[in-house]
Length: 131
Image (cartoon, rainbow, N blue to C red; front, top):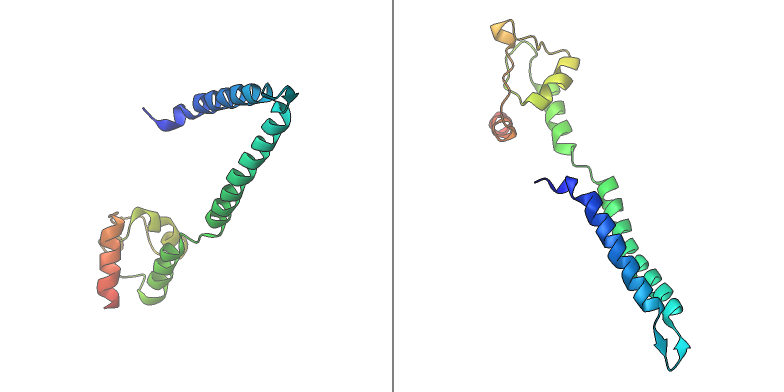
């Protein structure tokens, strides 16, 4: 079963449990004084501030991460150092950008044949070319 299909129901269950806890805390009394609602509000603010600060850090990391830099570096290397008339072996994800850069990708000519391979093999081939 995929986790994504359970997420809406899990969020509803979590909201229900949170509402139940908030209601129980709101009815709390200490020596006859109704301290529940202020305590519940303070607990909610503290919880949101603790969780919110973690979300801010993780979101900023996710928005500033340059995870595609090796991909663009490999494309730049191929475009600058290899002759477009020589057949090369590339991953499927590199096919369209190289075709946009002028490489033939129709596969009709044996000299212009593209073969999709795994990224591990592509990195190995690039390392062999570099070394």
